[in-house]
Image: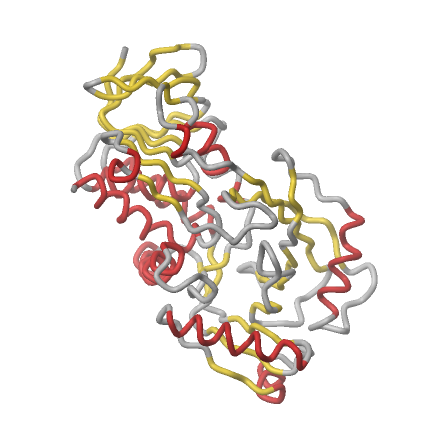
Length: 365
């Protein structure tokens, strides 16, 4: 049996950020990833948006880590040449009945330390002439990023400090012992003994936690999968900024985002599913047309093409209040040197560096 100082389970963007942070602090880090490469699920199937920190309850981990992470991420991109663009976004009210929602969003954002500019219809149209709205909020701190380049840089930094990524390594069992955690990998039921384990398995984090023999089940949340489908626009984007409607239950609505080449994509919607599968049903475009035309009436028939889908790793269901991030360390569950990261959905990409700092600090106390 091999010995390891720290084992990070999961090589998504958060797992890589945590591995980097711990390796830079002198820990010997082994990253176990079930897939054949890093970042193949939620981390590469999202909008690639750098969020400002607008929508989350004041004082929540999502709010605090998003705002802190946003600054860290922009600095990281500048320092290491990661492609990004601070393009800004407009949150639009498409009817007079939604104006009160804009006011609530602006107030909530201010509570999180995020300043949004209120634009009248005329002011919004000055920025985006093809937009249809009654009013809008402008978020100048919102941006977009090349998530793959970012993850590649995180991995490179971690490896430069001695970390090792082992793809194709599915954790199958864990057993708590006095001197660490015995970890089964693939067909080997006792492949490793780790001093510290970070469960950053994303969609599968609750499943991984259930592999820990004797771990209290009350500390493992029920997972829910909220699929988000994306469609791309045939032809040039009519917008230079991101455009978001007011939020809908379970997500932020069918919004328009841009990639770094300026191409427009729409999504994600919210489709509750029982298991992870990524096929985009072409017929779902009908709902997209109706939603998009509320703020861009000139969208032509047949202009949307199925693109890709992602799954949000939620720990709250369709009829429940959206859950906060859960970063459960020994102070929560009483198991020394174990950290479980549950429900790390959006804004997990934006918050990733702040989450990593938070985890590292927990292990130092």
